[in-house]
Image (cartoon, rainbow, N blue to C red; front, side, top):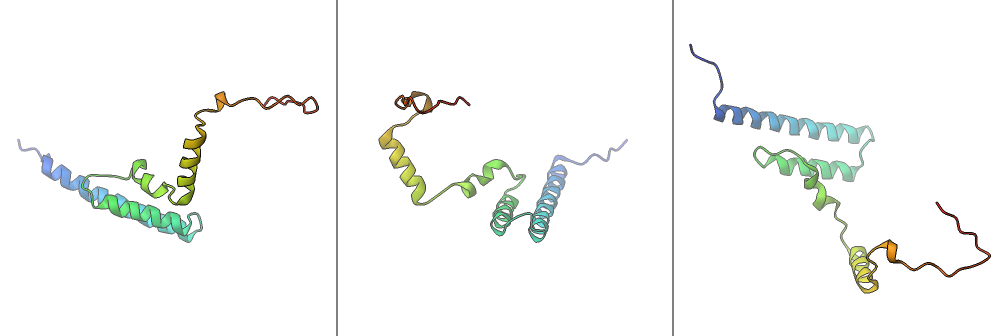
Length: 110
């Protein structure tokens, strides 16, 4: 009896074509959401860019790690923040000193 079971190479080829179809469907979905006003222009550009990058990698899908580079804050503000925090050396909020006691200010616990 002959089985019609696909070989390993055929499975990989079928998975690759299905993966490409899913990524194309995702890109179409991103653009439709943009047209409906759900996504901003920057968001759709970022999502489509990540989908295109992943499309070039064999047997890979979109994961949240692919967005780390897109969501990284660059420029002068992170530089200022890192320099100020290194000089102030505020490691955790638990070790911050209590403000001086002011009898006319009522302390509220939240």
